[in-house]
Amino acid sequence: MPLVLAATPIGDPRDASPRLREELAGADVVAAEDTRRLRRLAGELGVDLPERVVSYHEHNEATKTAELLESVVAGERVVLVTDAGMPSVSDPGYRFVRACIDADEVVTCVPGPSAVLMALAVSGLPVDRFTFEGFLPRKAGERTRLLTEIAQERRTMVFFEAPHRIAASLEAMAQVLGPDRPAAVCRELTKTWEEVRRGGLAELAEWAAEGVKGEITVVVGGAERTSISIEDAVAEVIARKDKGARLKDVCAAVAVSTGHSKKALYDAVLAHRREHSD
Image 1 (cartoon, rainbow, N blue to C red):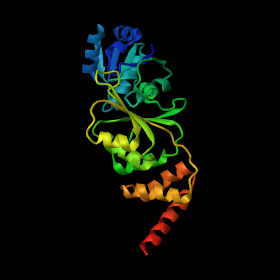
Image 2: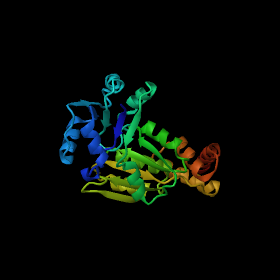
Image 3: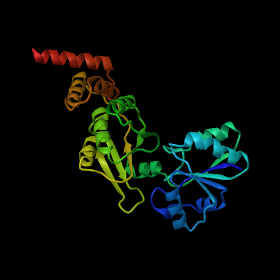
Image 4: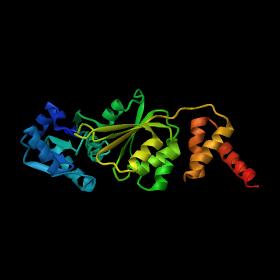
C-alpha cells in the first residue's frame, strides 16, 4: 500500500476535497503534524479517523520515519497530513517520502489547497515563472546574505513568514532588493480576515511595522535589468547604505538590477566617498 500525502485546507475547512475525506476515513494509519488540529478538522468534515493516529512533526521525524515506513512496507495505507496545505512543502514529510522511495514503495498524493499558488494568483504579479523560497533565515546576517544571493532572480518569488518577523523581513527585502520592488503580503488566506496588501517593499515594510497577525505568504516580483548610468547606480547604493545595509550586500544587489559589475560599483562608491570627504 502507498504513502499518501494529503493536502489539508489552509484555513477554510470547506476547501477540503472529497478525496481527503475518503483517505482519512480509509487509512490504516494517519500521521499528523498536530493530532489535535487533525481531530478538529475531522470533526468539521464529519470523518471518523482510524484507530491509529500518530504525531509526526519536525522534532520527531528522525525517529518516527522508520516506524511509519515499516507500516507502509507491511501493506498498511499511511496517510500523512500537516497543519495546512501539502506535506513536505516547508512542512514535515520529505524524510518520509525519501525513505519510501528508497524502499521502492509507492508515494502518491491527494492534491488540494496551496497558500503558495493562491498567493501567486491574487498577488497581481507575473505567475508564468516563479520560485518558492520558503522561510527566510531568522538571523539578520544570514537573511541579508540569502536575499543578496537571490537578488538577481528574474522569476516571481514566494516566501512564508511568521507574523513576528514579517516587518524585519520586509525591511531587509527593501534594503537588498530595492524599496520599490513590487510585492504582495497575503495574510490569513481563505479565512475570515483574509487580506492582501500590494505595493513596493519599503511601503509594505512601513505598514508591517505597526504589527501583523496571522499566517503570512509574501510574493515578490522578480528582478528587472535597467540601463542606468554608473553615477545613478552609485547614488542608489549610497541611498540604501545610508538606511543601514552593508555596502557589499547593496553593491551586489544593485549590480544585479543595473547590469554594472559589483566591483565597479564598490570602487565607484569608495571614490565618491573620498571625493566628498576632502
